[in-house]
Length: 468
Image (tube, rainbow, N blue to C red; front, side, top):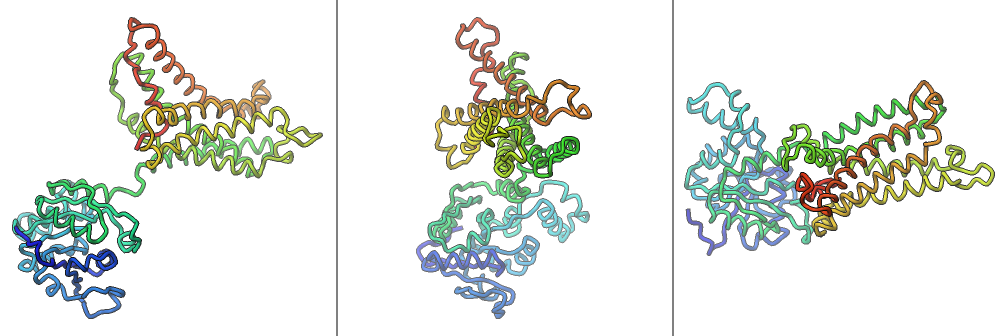
């Protein structure tokens, strides 16, 4: 197909929904209409309520498609069969841009309806259980080789597209079997203030693009969130049970459980990396096979660490209101009402621990982490996180070690919260120091030490968050 670029191209946006209106308005706001003849196609072009604020012509679908060089389908996937069958002659020798994000079920239904229409299949349920081709592939197959289908703009929301901010950069990916079509769509996007950052000349890749957009919102955060939520509820119940014995109020109980959750979440963030290091030493293998659940645990360390930092921040916020002799008399000199030795060290260690815990959180931000070199990134992630664990452990010691022993002093034999929170960080720190110590010995005492190659650069993999 050859589309002349010497004359002013005609662009038809089919659909007056949010996406169709947003694309048309953006074309006007960013000067695209000076380079392209843009119109919007609608089933009811005379209705002013359906498309308020549009400054481009709103025509009947057939009129908009007539003579168009580029057609943008801003309609639901379920309407594709109707549009392609009713206007098949007008959709020849054009570039069709598919901006939809069809789910697997919608794609299966799309193919099932088309094949049932020609008598190839009667049962549509089988299509939904597979991974059918994308809606863009369906359009390419349905419209034929005279049409070049391009998948683009499907990662952008209508609100972002409609924004008139000239300095807000919008980026998208374009996918097609035709490099010529990709170049034309890239020029059209640039005229509308949208940058095509990557072009793929294989329409089959659009399946992957649709799967990404159809993924659950914040999917990678769901498992860590629910894990910490369950742990937090269990810890709150435990703290509430002890509060009935020691007489704490609700805010103190919540604060204790949140602090316990924070240090436990940070420990769970570091624990899998430490286990991998020690396992490499014991198994004597550079790439030991790991169970799937353990690999998934490794992959959510960033989310675990971030949520743990949020819990630590909430703990510090609540502590500000509770830090007075009325609630924490054991941290104050009752005569002078100033912090005693125990109170000073508790507050100091907790504050410094939070600062070190903030280092990995800051380094995990793409805008900052991507600008750090490897040594700086490892320092902020690994050293900062391990230091936070050590200081948090010291914080629990100064806070509650006086009531840890003897065991017979525990009410109903329920260990103090500070002791329960102290155990897991100690285990993680011990394993980490063991792995780091072995690595240090192997590097400094010669290569004859058995398995010294196993833990090379392993300490860097103890980072709290994955680099993104």
